[in-house]
Image 1 (cartoon, rainbow, N blue to C red):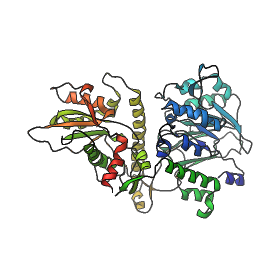
Image 2: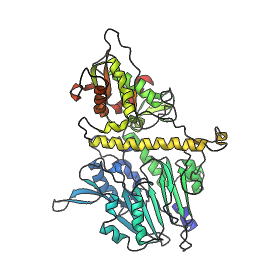
Image 3: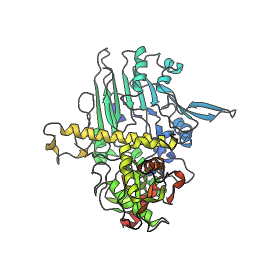
Image 4: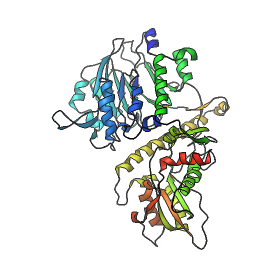
Length: 530
């Protein structure tokens, strides 16, 4: 694409809006003593980015932030931006100082001679690790360094950051720039909410968000050659991330597409996959199990399979409570991605179920009381989950809440896209003609999706799910109430609200099994899918 840009005599800028940690075994499956994403980030270092921004996943663990500061940011020599994010380190005199993880801003000139002032901004994130600092966006724009950085008018402002487009801090940064430069083009690349989105704050700006994970590449173009003061001609595309897309837009055949640099990255990723043991196959999934494309409960739902089959089977084989009926309750947010028919590998375990939780239980709960817990939890909603027994909210709970809010927003977006699509006349005529995929409706003019699709089905998911009710002897109608440790406080509160015979507390809970939640599916696959 850089070569094509030169052939067309245009500028092409490559940006990344953050979150290079967490999500697959390539980043998270490192051996003991390693640092999350250090090895996988070596491949990002080979890409000629013009600007990168920090994400919240770079800040959950200080060691990861420090690695980004010492190794990743330094490699990019001023292109990795953390305008409102600091890290505390020791200086040459062994004194602690707070300094930017990357650079505050970048000023550079494009190949075509256009001047650019760039910032990398993170949303008002509050669950970062100790010795890292996230400044509120409204405070950042009042800093003297920021005011100094925008005094000189560039040909365009480039704002890149891990921050949603609507209702966030982008308008604060934009307004601060507009007070000084009312007509300068402003290009904004956001993220975090896992949705495709586009909006325009005025006729000389565009804001683009490019979905979740590596499913979408966002493309924005603007004609800066007219030199006038009217609205600019913008376009945008959401590109499905696959080889067909890349070959089409680079005008290359399958045989022509690969480059030596690209093949080296592919080979390096395959070598890393082998080194981390990610290709190890635990079993063969007999079918697809999906998060939102199948209703819950159903045979095609990954949540149904997990809570009704996989977890009960694995726990039953790994507990001292063998033979005692149990009822299991987990959060639906415990699963992160779909399982597809075919080999289930170590990397799939990392991708599908990465969260590490213990299974706790309360023994001898009356069966009639235990069965009241699930509906009460879903009636109260997950918002009650974040309050501890004394009303306090732990950092881990706040992290989980943030992740769940993002996932809930993504699911709501899927449902909205599905509803809007089928509200159109003759929309059903495309069923079976177009492939499944994202169908985006945003507020920018013209079409955004690069390839037309039929929208992915999107079924609602309850916040909490449970195993099938066990057979309980009439002579002893009690069960072990089993749950992931993360929801313990809410389960206890719910139990106490459901009956008055006993006041439960955390002292009544015990560890049910040595197996943790991030181990269940691979253990189940070894037994059930071989």
